[in-house]
Length: 158
Image 1 (tube, rainbow, N blue to C red):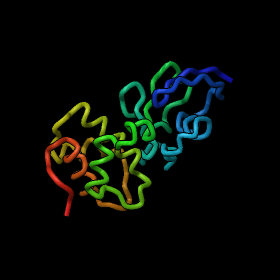
Image 2: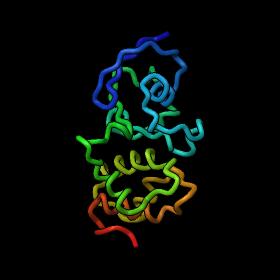
Image 3: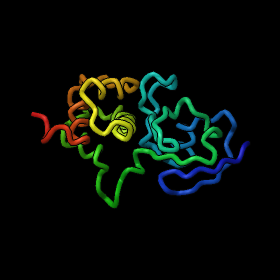
């Protein structure tokens, strides 16, 4: 076992973990952060995307021990006193989900994109989320949601 110290969603944790434990399993199984979805365990789908030290990462590709000393934000950590994060709100307003399985990872990837490019074009949005798969929506409403969160469009989709 290896001792790690992490701040997750604003709370500091100190835990013993097996050195081979993936961050996604640590978050879900030890901390109960089940909004971080396990999709493929191969980094292909992006459903497990979280922010680690301010950058989006696929948590199935990071060992918990690699995150030692870091700060993690999960989808659960975006809630601001009962209000949705602006990207979450834009996803809701623009119907950017169907089954919802990809939504947490997609939102985390979109936040990272908007942090680095606050006014992306449609092509830049599509490129920015390309590591996150959605098997339901066809992506159009997801792109609209990211545009809305960026303030580059107005209103919900028809």
